[in-house]
Length: 346
Ligand code: 6CS
View (cartoon, rainbow, N blue to C red):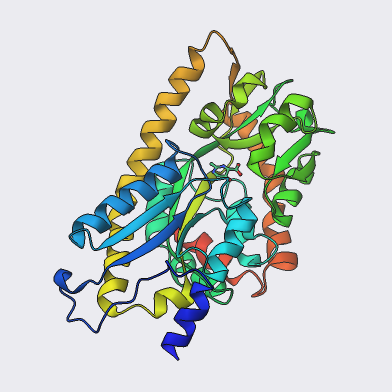
């Protein structure tokens, strides 16, 4: 049965070899294997360097017996194609943004709720590390679709980019906002008066350049590295939400691994939570400075006051009820628990 699941997960790619003989859990017991690890970002960006670091650690811990091959965004299609690749076993591991499973794992859209997590990115990471609502209840929802999230981590506070500048909800009136594939993201931006449109990020630079969309949201490191500042005139440091990524594995493949391999993966992912936090912090800090000093592609940086942020927060709060009533399959139970955990963490 286990072998059957493993073979099914491998599809027709013979390279997906991560079988190991029964082991006593010692590092010398690992058998040679190659795992494919797809990310939604390109070389140098947070998700990709995360996969590289993971590969390095796995190689060190197994004396080079297990090789992890990081794949950058693009080679396997769009982000939703990558979700399918993980589910079908074409890759064993993936960094995934919950927004791209928005039409499949309904509960995962919880991360699209604005002003839910604390303003502090550090505090948010603590909650992502410890939340039972996310690490137990939400994980089960993903597992029903063959995806096991092993960790949730932030890529930083999000900012809005646009040409006209966004500093109050009225600025979103008639605004064509690029979003990921998530009905809840649609609702969130409709509440501000915008017209949301789902797009993969590979099409985003051109869409912004041509005016197919007027703006988008992302952490600062990504805005600068993807050169959106070349085609946008303003960046609003809104911190309306955190960009959350998940380290995921194909559920059947993971469950078919011997205990020592599962432990190797889960411990390495856990150990890397602090590393991921520091990496996004470093990139977001460095790229904000670069963006401020970029005279070739100058952008106006708009820093929202607390009063301005509260205007957006007021419009965003009712979306939690929308989530409970129209999105959640468990009447908002995961959100209820997460809200309690966030409250306790404050
Ligand atoms: O906006 C996006 O869709 C992309 N943003 C980030 C920070 N990572 C990958 C994702 O696809």
